[in-house]
Length: 141
Length: 147
Image (cartoon, rainbow over the protein chains, first blue to last red):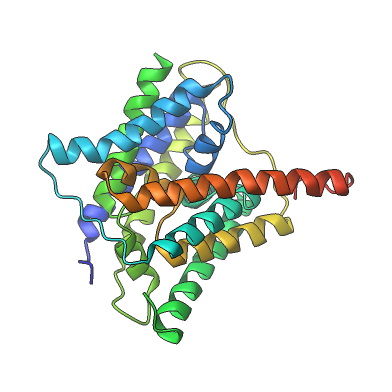
């Protein structure tokens, strides 16, 4: 069980939106984690803003816990071997699919991009189906 | 200036992910579990993010260019190719297995837990593997671009 958190989730979502708009307004870039991270593999000429964005994203929860005393729930109910399998699938999938939840799901859909809409519907349906199969057909995590 | 700005924007992004619950794989998996203990919170994450970005982009993209120089880097493709659909499906299966997605797991690294590190290592391996596969695809069939 996880608590239903409509207000916190709405606030968090709005902050993600603020970051997406700011990254476009100031840097002219889509706030897609696949694209930002992928541009560092390998490190090329424009690595500075990418590395800074990632560093900020990683530092934020740490600062919230240490300096702000905020509790950030985290639970990974999946056996480690499946975390590895999942990571490999996500990595391969976002390269071929050219984006993920942040790039397609938020930035692309906000631009009414048909590719992003197709990608978002596809990965959401695949995730719903996967959780249904694992939890209710196979009785797994 | 560019680096400081990107760092601050990254902080806002990471704070948003952390507050919203997207950094918590259990919460993400419960969102996908319609037939179980369904947690609809993620609808509010997407709703809040989309509303702000939809309005913000409309204002920003009217401008001639980004405030810190350069140009707006916007994807130019509009075609729905098999790679987009199959890749997104594979990503969705992966996301449904662990509850980690790229935007959620990078901030989760800041929680100093083991699982996000393992996931990111596997994900980076997957990204590099897919790039090699794609390159071989393209060199085997030079007429087929952008798969």
